Amino acid sequence: MTRWFEDIVIDEAFPLGDHSFSEDEIIRFGKLYDPQYFHVDPELAKHSHFGGLVASGWHTVSVGHRKMVDALDAEADRLKAQGDEPGVSGPSPGVNSMEFKAPVRPGDTVTYELVVTGKRPSNSLPGWGLLFNRLTATNQRGELVYRAEIVGFSKLRDYSMPLKLKVLLALTRVPVIGPLLRRST
Image (cartoon, rainbow, N blue to C red; front, top):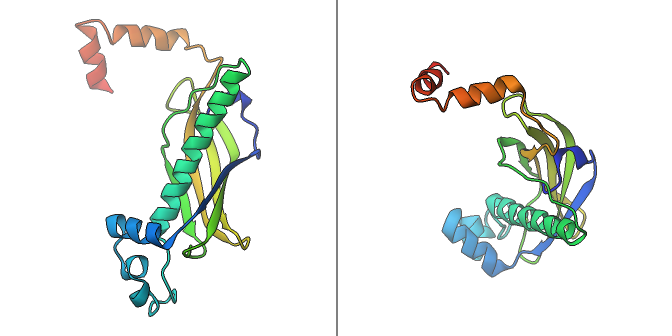
């Protein structure tokens, strides 16, 4: 998230944009990353339980992730343009759930959206907060095709490290004491 942890509003929707999946793209991705016959061979795919060619779920996820990163970059640019300093985002510590609800077929246009559903300060990384997010993807018929519950880090704007942590951090840099402290953790 390119907003500071303190500025993030729970349940605010962030539209991420849409993507149209072509047959060629589905086959190309399938051949590279998920070469199952229902992703790479239109004729054989007719005999699958899908009844035709479908995009790999990982293809749907990858496009959504790209849309999310692009939208976050655009949000940072928007904040800079209005004279604000964007927040600092961190990595994701994981995905809590992921569901592929309906197949994505050639010609489908999928719209992605991110919603921050909760947040709390991190217990393990001082100065950072955890964001709990729902990422959804819906096709042009309004069918949910993908849903994930993901977690991400966001930096706290007004964080000040407690004196106790500052002292411990300084001690880790002392040649004799530092190695001992690092070994005990």
